[in-house]
Image (cartoon, rainbow, N blue to C red; front, side, top):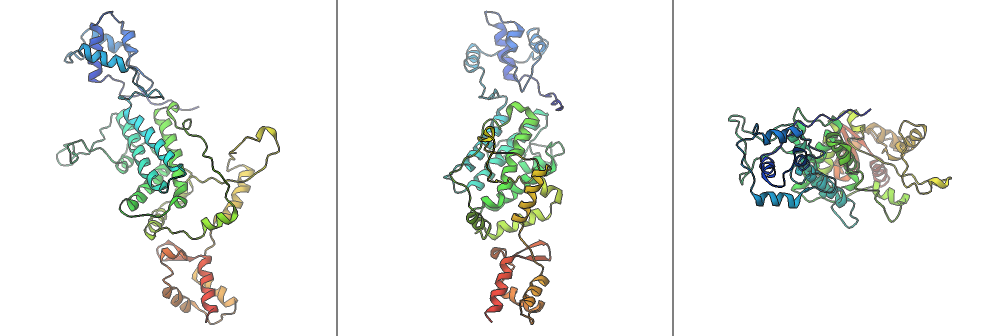
Length: 396
């Protein structure tokens, strides 16, 4: 059974709303407390009818002046002032902005005419998550403004507005409800954003696609967990369609050499090298989906575009074993390269000769993609380097 959401601690009227309530109380025809309450309660904020009676009896908010007749008319003209999901455009502004920003991020990424999908997604998704966290902290009664540690005064922006916490600061707060794999996913995207903010990038969609997908699913899960399943985005976006499948030759080309800039590869490797294996494998950090072409033998399944298979099932384990063989790039230690060449007839080729060869080719430059440094000082070579060595020796 799903745990009940904590009651909203901010179930209270704002000052401007109290002014409107006082105007309603004084206006004919007379409205009952229950009638007035209907204008101010909503799914994300429940107001007790006793609060209306307290205002009518002068027990609370005595210092608030009643709204004018024109202000009351303006309020009634735009009421209920909600979006399509029932969120109030003023009271739920942060939540509305969070949902809208993530929808914009996904729609931009899915645009077939877009060339900078990942870059635009990351920037917009970070904004979406920031608004979501601010909405959470506001609901919990947390002051999410930066303050001067010495004086306690609120820090202002250049133009005088309160400076609110950025996403990284929100994630580091003790009251942040986000789990570690989700935080790792967001911090990875923020790290990549720092790299692309001030420099030109080439296509990075394939490199971070799994993180982008995980970011979407994590946002939807957090949104529903914090504010209720009725506000989820899964009803807003369906399955993205494409005009053609990916042939094996196309796949091999995609997986071969890319033109990713070295600083992005370095940032990627450096960030993931510090993560525990449990986080790396968690779908909240990087969500990977395998598309397997299949035929159906049942009329009822002919329209099933996507079939979800649990990883722990027998079918899931069978697919996983094949995918591991397909996706893992074989790696070689330096001694493996030397032994392979000696077995091919180059008996004089040794570790020192190999060292001279890779230094001359600047082979450990990430731009060449000859290998990977899994941890400081632990370099492994790919088949691409083995072929290079073989070609170099054959030319002598």
